[in-house]
Image (tube, rainbow, N blue to C red; front, side, top):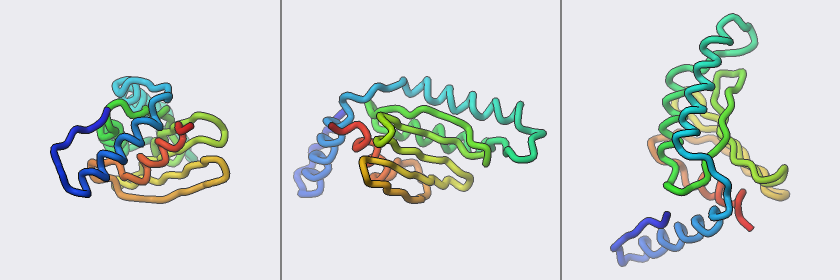
Length: 150
């Protein structure tokens, strides 16, 4: 999965080193195919469109959220672990990378290209919210890799 570069700068060297670290931390992850994950996003969207229209406490997933979730999955680096997918009652799509009860990260895809994420890695519980603009934020990639580290 390593990205080749012909750069000689310090930044290029750091990028290569970071990529190698992510590669090594993710090599033992059990992954679905990217297409299986995108199919699961479509299934979650279709299920809420058909089944949640009359439920007062549940909101159907919008096409906007569906499309953002698909773009997010497509933006994951090749060979990176793929998440499990679920629909949330508030109309968001949840993407989760799970290794054990204390090694998990969850990313909720919300309207307006917002990503809300939380991880549990040992005793650490980092979290955040960012806007998704066609690139998976480095902080999220870092914690996905840490879930599968060691």
